[in-house]
Length: 80
Image 1 (spheres, rainbow, N blue to C red):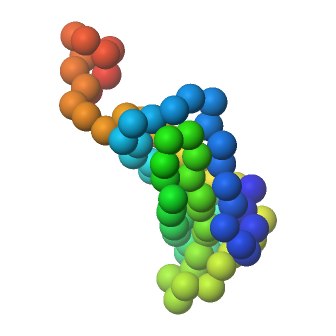
Image 2 (cartoon, rainbow, N blue to C red):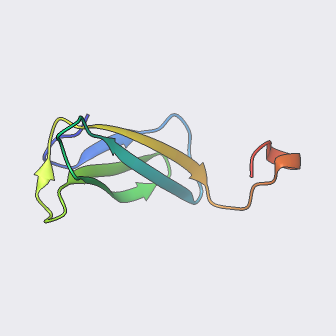
């Protein structure tokens, strides 16, 4: 859940070179909004949900995916 300040997410593993993607889950009539990410290092990152003009939005659920940077193959990793 987002707040108007940056929210820190602590992960359960470490990443050498993490890639984070995130999307807000906006209710009907809310939005638009986008997730900003900063300080994505090792085992944590910070996010904030903002309107197109840059004003922070609070109370929004955020879904995220974190992966190690690289090339993934179906044969080796089960995904592409």
